[in-house]
Image 1 (cartoon, rainbow, N blue to C red):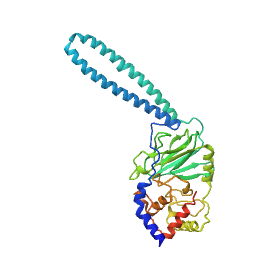
Image 2 (image 1 turned 180 degrees about the vertical axis):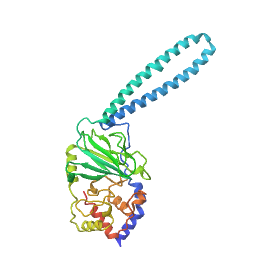
Image 3 (image 1 turned 45 degrees about the horizontal axis):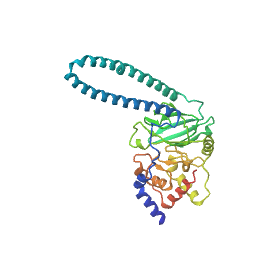
Image 4 (image 1 turned 180 degrees about the horizontal axis):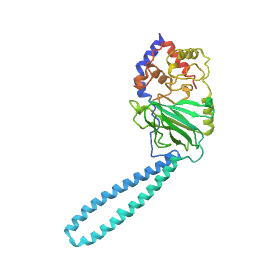
Length: 341
């Protein structure tokens, strides 16, 4: 009875959970770079912004001065020749010399940004294949041994101070991958692989976004990049390559059985179990991730429960159907998913 009440309350609270527990994270600030590529783009952006503001201000001042001087010229025609010479000087300086200097500097900064985005400063630490789906990101860490490949979703771990190579493609429509504090935008196109680079100067969690309209939940397709020390990254890689541990607690064991006999195993994979679905994200180490639903919710028990109970109330149009699970099985399933670290 109590379990049934819990499940009903979870279902009724799902819309509220979607509002209260959304992953707010740091703002998508492209004017501050936390990596070589983003820093180069930020310098170019600041230069163009400042120059544009100065040009607008100068034009406004010249218009005002022109209006005021025009009135003086009408009152004293003898000043016309002096005004004409001064106007000619402004044409040469303000119309030719200053714009030429601005264009040369802008061209140099643009070349620097192109150089930073075209190749990394050193050999990549790893290669990551990212596949865009409506509306989540499938992430594969490519290894020479296919059996050692790491498969995860939405959360990308990278070592600080080392570039990683991204191979970007799409499984459905055109997307665009963007982590503004680390790199610029790269289109993600079906049937094509585009190459990009990520490198972080310092540890931290960096938000990203899909910047190509791809459907109803385009705005809720946020990748997360976790930059950590090389040692922490190596530890993360080791943990991610392992299969999911077989649970020993009774509730979690019952939850594994529920997962494997329900529709969950049809769409999701968990290495080390009989679940080999490929429609949705790989859940082998779900509990170790910061968010679920491609950055929409923080990875907490209540949010996971709300997502399983009725994901359509949180992210309408996603491929996960409304799940009908008996209350006791529902709680057991939650207990099992919490073991996937």
